[in-house]
Image 1 (cartoon, rainbow, N blue to C red):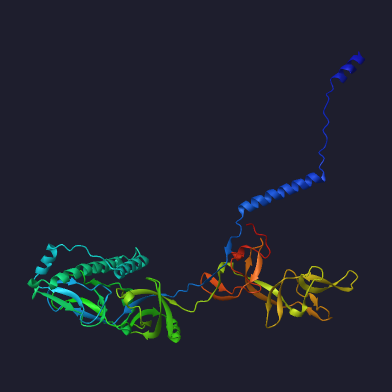
Image 2 (image 1 turned 90 degrees about the vertical axis):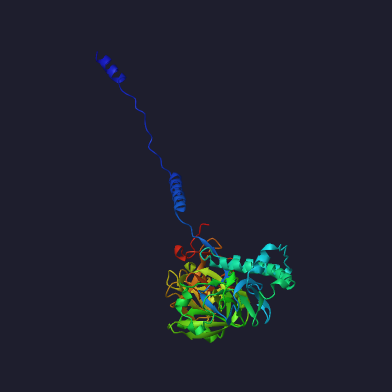
Length: 471
């Protein structure tokens, strides 16, 4: 009985599977660490904003030297001597001599009726007239702005004047043979030589010394077109003549600008209307409103701007040219100064560096070659600028083939940018020759500087020296 119970107890015992303990070998640990590092790098790269490059180009600074000025000419207003209907024959901007027919007056209106009753036929344009049309259209298209629509009306009147002149020229030939209009039809001739203009604004007799800030703002400015008048009374303005090629543009300036411009004597001016450039003499004015102005005197190109009272001009001052870079790319770094005599080359690979004194474990002095690239060289002091990450303050350098020593102690700051041509942030010295609020002009083809088409870091604060850059 006891044997049976013992056998039954043995039969009821459960068999459990033996679990082996996890065996972590060194290979698995290395693989796991590498996997975690790779995942971290990928995630960090995706989330990071890689440094943006900027390609260095040659250029100059666009200085804030654009001014709105008022054009002043020697203008003679011609008034109607006889009342009647007007027909114009000289085109706006055309030069007429004394005695040339500018317009005619029809006192009774009979010639006007005659004009409407006859067939005018076709008028053809010669090559010179076609060139004038083309020039006027190009000038208008270049200077047109939707924010200032008034020049469109001036352009309309200029073209209308040309068309009327061509049409009226044919009528005038017919009129010479028509005796029925004698006595009621008068030809009005130019009293002198000049450029014809068919508009008035009240500034015809304005002197440069009378220009004020209020006039330049042109809030109440009104320009009256004369060519559109069909009927004129005695004494009414009909047209005006600009009788001299000498004219002026008066611009507002600060006292410092005015003094500098007057000292220049002459300045090159670009007219923004058509990009025409000309030289002008300068004269400083202090007008009754207490403001400073500069009078720009020209002796040519008056004909080109005879229809304009206000002009935007750019003064082309002595602009420095070189490599144009944004100010955000400029960085400053400190470097150690080392005399030229302490620089040498390695005997193995020819790399540049210095010989530094070291001490062995037993305390005996020795030396080592430290590769160190120069970032600049001072011609006056004959010293190289070496990286502070290569040398330390207090390092003792040994002069090649000598027992003389030099202790590293002085630092100086260089201005530069980070070149990224090689895939890492490589500091390069720059020499700024001009700058404004956004860009700087630096010298090109310097020994330690930049060249055109180099890629530099746009934001210098986003990188450190020799940082690897993801492109």
